[in-house]
Amino acid sequence: MTGRPRRLAWGLLLLLIAAPVAWAHPTIVFGELSTDPSPPRADAPVEVRFTLHDPVEAPVEQAIVFLEATYRPPGTVAPGPPPGEAADPEALAPDGSVRSDGNDPDATEAEDAPALPPGGFFASDEFEEVTPADYRTTVVFPYDGEWTVTLRDRTYRQEETNATMTLTVGPAGTEEPITFLFPPTAIGPQSLAAWLIWLVGVPLLAGAVVTVLVLRSAHPDVEEDAADEDEENEDTGEDEERGGG
Image (cartoon, rainbow, N blue to C red; front, side, top):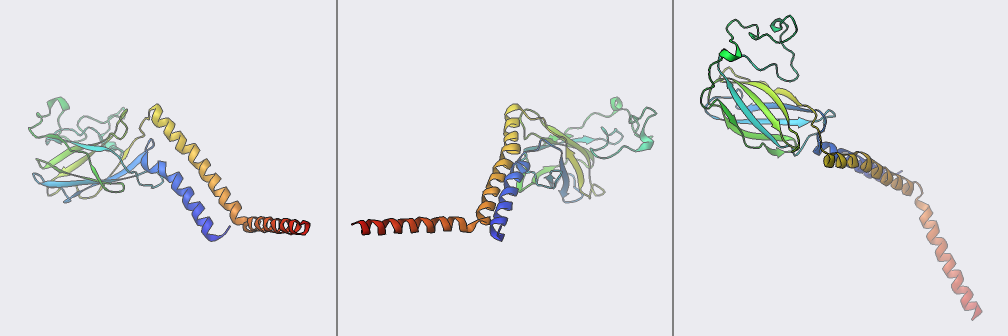
């Protein structure tokens, strides 16, 4: 197989196989969230951005994601460690659950937490995908302090998947990007059928195309020989007709 057909065959195969991976995510999806400015400042526009990729590092495109943020007044307990982060062993109760005080003597029970102040919750518009797998939106955090940020992935209408993390706003706030993950999303019958077509049918089609290209490149002289033989037969037939006449 010559160089050019081989490159075309492999390029077509990779394109067809990667296409469904880039646009669908019924598997785990990894992300990284950051802000500009970093750390984020209160009562000023903050650009929140994140990127998405699947377990084989393929970018995940066309995701429909919204942000919800809830302010945590000082002294309240976080809802739990962000996905992918282990809880502090010293903050665990004897049965292994997270203690209500989180190992912080100044923390209060959830029922004793102060009432949520006005403006302590907001939801953003849908993130805009500015480049493939790079999503951004602009929000305003009214207060300095810790915010519980939830990214809601609503790409599939039948079921959404969420990622929750803690973002600290203010001069001493969060500077480093935060890694997170979206767990697998259940897909409906129609989506499942389309996904199976991509998973089974596309590789078969790509294999057939590659086989044809291999055979044609491996025997480039067969068609030429057949064409020459046809021409010789035509010439012989014409000579016989002239001789008979």
